[in-house]
Structure formats: structure tokens, C-alpha cells
Length: 321
Image (cartoon, rainbow, N blue to C red; front, side, top):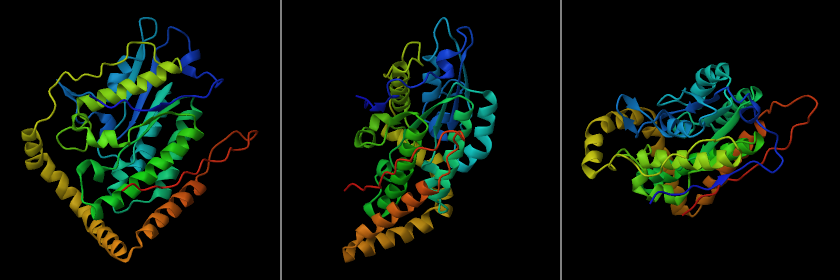
């Protein structure tokens, strides 16, 4: 059975969005930004890919209000790509709703910098909300846990993804986004949610994300149609599918990542083992937490000159296990 994701909604008395107040005859414009998670990898359909955003788009409108949906997400995108390429194109579309889900690819790069990621995401959120869009955001599980990496390799990735999720939580609160939690243990352990590569949602996973986003949007009056079904139409990936992926596309993925991430990840794993042997692993957690606090403190928020900026929530990185 697919996980039902916890969601957060707007506070009572929040101002209406353009999607609620626009002329009844005008379609609701929905833009999706991000990487392969939003592009639709793992949810193949005849003629291409679908994904959670397209499934959600089908349930936003109804017979009186249609939906105009554009998916700007591109597989492999980093936060810099979303800021520099996708966000300007999406802003020109003038969406009523805009999903921004990105960051996992940043954690898989040796150049990972949580401060830069926070600044880029803030700029994207500001650009879209300044145009009147309601944001959709999500926190995601760390790839090391999903792939089942051993602790020395997995914990550095877990710290990075935890920091990304903390930034997303803080910015979601600041911009009153529709935020969905998809980082809990149920998402990691439920294999039916994941495709053969264990890096992208399977059809069931995409449907789960779409259905839970629809539930939250409906609570705000922003989803008018029928919620997408949770049950997949295609069979889940088999062990043969997983082995076939590893022998074909997976090999190329591992080679590309090895030239970028693996050398540094091995160094991080060595440091992890040394600190574990000395009983000083908490030092690594504190360093990650300090980097996160610096990233959030450095973010510049764009507000009306007449309205002083509210303080940004400052969460802390926590590690499980």
C-alpha cells in the first residue's frame, strides 16, 4: 500500500491567490520546475513520460475551469539550472501554481554548497511569487538511504539531503508554499513506490505525490477536479527490470557519477570511519549544522519596502541511526 504523505496547508485567513480570484473562464496555469523527479522519469507512457505533475494537472481543473500545464523540469538539473534557465521561462508563463522540487542532484556533486543552493532557491521562489504564483514544494529522502548504501557512504549524503530539506522547509514557510513531506522512512522502505533504478519514483510513487498534492490544494480551494488515482496501471518493476537497468542505463549513470562524486565520497567515507573509531562522529553533524545555519542566515529575502522581512525559521540538521 502506498504511503500517505503528511501535508501542510495555509494558515486560516491567508489571502486568496490569483488561482482563486481569476476570471472563471480563464484556465489555471500550472508550471512545474525541477529535475527528473518532476520530468516524469519512472512513469513511462506511450509517447514519452508522464510523472506526478502531469497527473496532478489533470485534477486541478474541472468543467468550468480548465488547466494550462507546462513542465519545465529537465532530468539532471541542479539548483543553478532551475534558477538560470527554468525559472525565467516559467515566470514568463505567469503561472497561478508553480512547483519547485530540486536539490537531490546538488547533493550528488562534489561542488555541493548548501549556502549557494539556499540563495538560488530563494531567488526562484521570489521570482515566481512576485508574479503571483502559489508555490508547491517537497522534501525528499536522501539517495543513500534509498539505494541502501553502507553507513560510511550513506551518512555524508544523508547530511547533505537533510540540509537541503531544512532549506526547503524554511523557504516553504517564508513563501507560504504548499509543502509535502516525502522524506520519511516509509518512502525509503516501500519498494512499490520506486522504479527499477531506486532513484526515481515508479508510477505508484508519482501517483502518491500527485494525490497528496491534490489533497492539499483542494483544502486551499486550488484543485477543483477529481484527485488522481493512487493505484498504478502498469505492473511494478521486477528484479529482472532492476538488473536490466543496472546492465544498461545504470552502468552509464554510475560511470558519470564516479567521475564527479565518487572520489570525494570516498574521502568523506574515510573521514566518517575515522570519526566513528574515535567516537567523535558528532563533530561532523555539528559542522553540517553550522553550514546550514550560515546558509539560512545569508539568504536575502525580497519583500515590499513597506513591510519589514519576517525572521526566517532556522531548523537544525538531525541525523537518525
